[in-house]
Length: 306
Image (tube, rainbow, N blue to C red; front, side, top):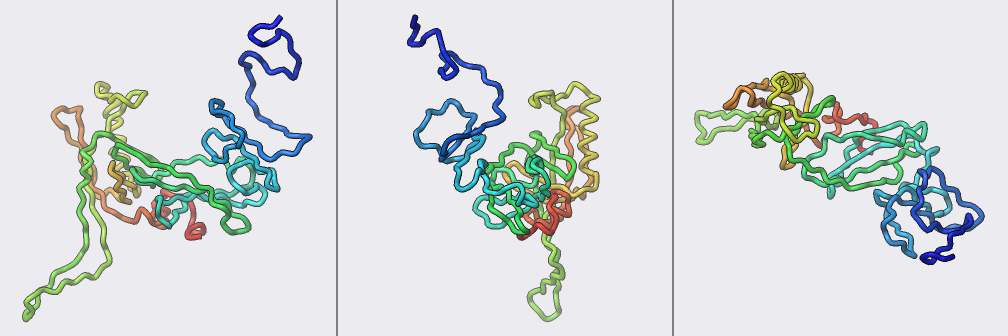
């Protein structure tokens, strides 16, 4: 008997008529043939094509092209030839890379790297690169583009990250260029004396730090103990004596030290607390040396400017 074009009988070579539950695939084996291409993807909704897609996307698991080897990843290096893997980034359109991390490779698991880059400016497009070190020199750059977005004020150091939506985001700043005006007896105009290369900014921050619920969407004002502990922790963070990175919602970025201790004042209600503090710029956010000294990147000097 035939029903809907399918017989109620089959053998091991039959195509199943109904959806089939397949266990997680962890191994693929090819044999007894000549193969030009093998692509595995998690995307099962795209239409099958005669030509194998060449782009590597987030759903691609492996893509072997058999160009004289059996490499099936989106990089062209092998485990046994790589001594280190370094992570770099730069703004799209720039030429200078900043080396963020350097990892020694001794086993396959060392390629599994997960970290957060807190040194990127909001509202900018960046290019990140994983670069193998082969025989002491850099190999092929595997790159991807990342859009950094934020709608909150953020301040972070090597150990902790704090952000808040409750800020005026003014971040008023003053440029400091030390110099002295000297008026001489017989000259109409004064002489400007500048005996230092100092040229930095001082930034004033007004913000409020409140704990939120589990979803992060609702501010917890009614729990006084929790609110006070959170507020005190924020102030302790600001005066812990560590160099910090300060980010504005519009993409400004400073490497700073909190030089005016935070003041904690009430606004209309004792629970509605505003913290005000000032920062002094202490370095260049695009300098590997300054970021490394602040503990914000881990790649040592030997990996810079390669």
